[in-house]
Length: 178
Image (tube, rainbow, N blue to C red):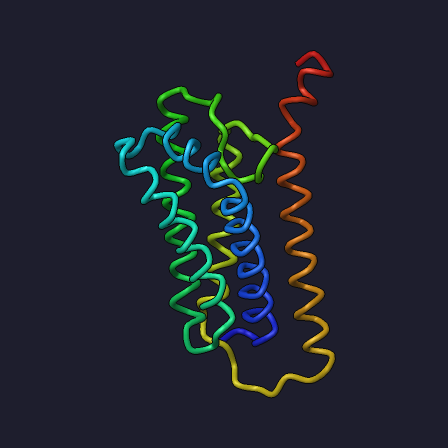
C-alpha cells in the first residue's frame, strides 16, 4: 500500500497532463486529425472518429483520475492509452517515418517522431501505474495537501521542460551542425 500523497499526486499530475493534451487537440481539431491520418495506422476515413475518440478518452480519463472510486481504473486506462500512442509511434519509427509530427506538443509546436518519445510514454505509464496502486488509509493534513499540489506541479513542470527540450532538439542540432 502506497502513501496516499504519492497516489493522489500522481493521479492529479496525470489528470492535468491529459486535460492539457485534450485541450490542445480541441483547439485545432483539423491539425490533430491530419496528424492522426499522417500516422497511417488507420484507414483515412476513420481518422475523424479516431480523433474525436482520443480527445474524449483523454478528457474522460482526466476526470476519472480525480474521482477516488474511478482512480485505479482510469490510471490503467492512461497506461493503455500511452501504450497505444507508443505503438503508433513505434510502428512509424520502424517504417522510417520520423518526419511526421508526434501530435504531442500542441498547435504550432511540431515535434518529429523519435525513439525518446517511447521512453517519455513509458515514464507517463509508470506514473499511471503508481496512481493505480492501492493506497494506505490515513487522513490527509494540511502539509499533505501542500505536498500533493507541489509534487503535481513539479511533475507537470518536468514534463513541460522535457517536452520543450525534445521539441527543440532538432532545431538545436541544426544550429550546432550535428
